[in-house]
Image 1 (cartoon, rainbow, N blue to C red):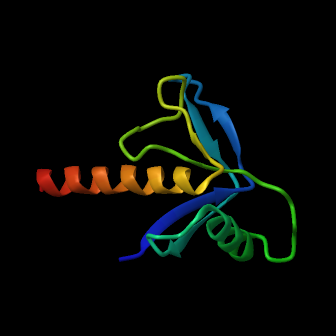
Image 2 (cartoon, rainbow, N blue to C red):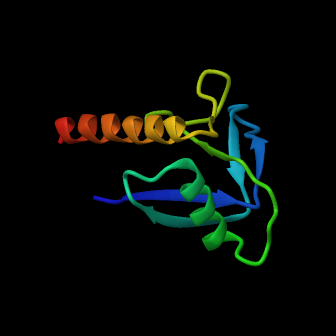
Amino acid sequence: KKLKLVCSFNGTFERSPLSGKLRYTGGETRIVLVDRNIGFSRLKSKISELLCPNNNVPFSLKYQLPDSESIDEDNPLVLITLDDDVRCMIDEYDKFELYETALA
């Protein structure tokens, strides 16, 4: 089973005037399909190929925990720099998916 990752880029984080919580605005969003056993280097390479094929601009990979509704001090984005970080992201996804299935 492959994972569908929602990748947003070329936007900015801004505070919502009403809640004060961070939100990502502007930019583009694409869905990237990857194998569940993908490592960090291949993940970063695949995202780079799909999202900016003619541009070797450095970028970082971060993800939002699946059960967090907003990005703030209590729910920060999680940086991915190692294979283990990718594995942790997939584990979090699996836990959330299991929880959602149990609720259905």
